[in-house]
Image 1 (cartoon, rainbow, N blue to C red):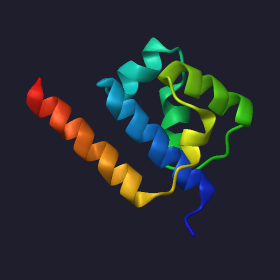
Image 2: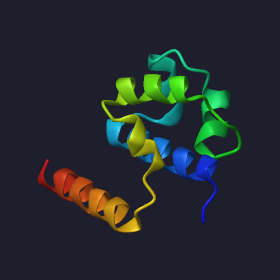
Image 3: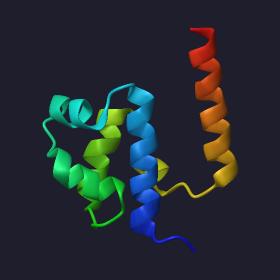
Length: 88
């Protein structure tokens, strides 16, 4: 089973990509430390549930979305995003 820090980081990175902003601009806009957040995205550090809740609110997600490990859902979301980009 994949380490939970890596799962959270992977999902955070994916959600950030959905915003269309690069890492630095996204975290600058929300007044988050880019170096710290890069460590979170790489799954190198633990974050609190409260912090995840704040991120979820910023991203319009549920806290539980950060714990998604279903590869089919992740692939499906990427395909949906790709279709949106091609139709734009």
